[in-house]
Amino acid sequence: MIPGTVGIIVGIVVLLIIFLYFIPIGLWFSAIVSGVRISLMQLFLMRFRKVPPGVITRAMIEAHKAGLGGIKRDLLEAHYLAGGHVESVVHALVSAEKANIELSFNMATAIDLAGRDVFQAVQMSVNPKVIDTPPVTAVSKDGIQLICKARVTVRANIKQLVGGAGEETVLARVGEGIVSSIGSSFSHKEVLENPDSISRVVLEKGLDAGTAFEILSIDIADIDIGKNIGAVLQMDQAEADKNIAQAKAEERRAMAVALEQEMKAKAQEARAKVIEAEAQVPLAISEAFKNGNLGIMDYMKYKNINADTAMRDSIAKDESSSSSSIGNQSE
Image 1 (cartoon, rainbow, N blue to C red):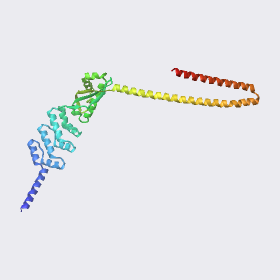
Image 2 (image 1 turned 135 degrees about the vertical axis):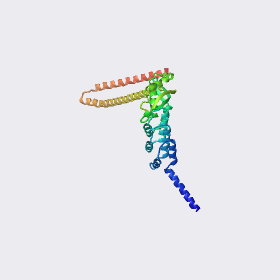
Image 3 (image 1 turned 180 degrees about the vertical axis):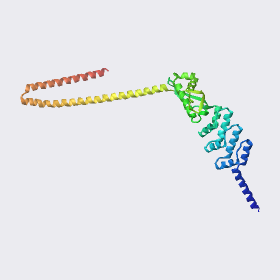
Image 4 (image 1 turned 60 degrees about the vertical axis):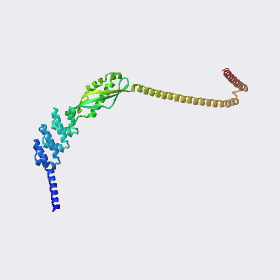
């Protein structure tokens, strides 16, 4: 008897839990007490539509207590089934209502489905956010590199959250504006003396156009001096010019060596022709003897001239060698 009674009690408890799961009477009672009219049948059918009744009911209660009208159960269910965050949307609508920010339910759901945190966006509209830019490197006209850091105060633009650019675009545009402002300065000293000029120039460019934020202020947090880029470029140019000059000098030297080799080859060729011509002289003399064109006296004169020429060459060589030896001794 006792085991059977325990089984019956357990079965009744299980059936009661299943009944309360599909028909959340407590949740329905909380809604009725809060002034939200919702039927038990709708809470029961939410289970089959894969919609958590607690999320929808709590959202309806919060919206009703905040005085938000026009937020119906069907709209909340549709937004949940579309993959949205119902509680975040309702929190954002309540916050916007209290802060006198114009935000409709359709706009809030569109922002949420776009992947942005609509509640955080409303909070940023009330309390602006400060974004620190990474170090931005720029070079002024005098060739000095400056490393600048800025703090950008932005406020969420509710109307531009759908389709508007994010923080990365704002930071990129601010960095571009800083580079442009420093690059247009004639001297880095001007930038160091008046850093607010950078903020003024950047703000005038309207960098928040097409973004999900409104830039309220741009403050230059720090400016450091980097390298002397102008001097580095001049050194690199001088090194390049030196290498070019060396290459041209090497080219001229190679051409001179080639010309010298060519001249030597031509001189050797000329000497070879002279030797060849001198070898023909005895044959020509012999032929002249045979033909009777050359007599013995003529031949003897020719030999005397050659001997005289050889003697003079020998004397000239001896004099030049002796004069060079005397010069070496005097030194």
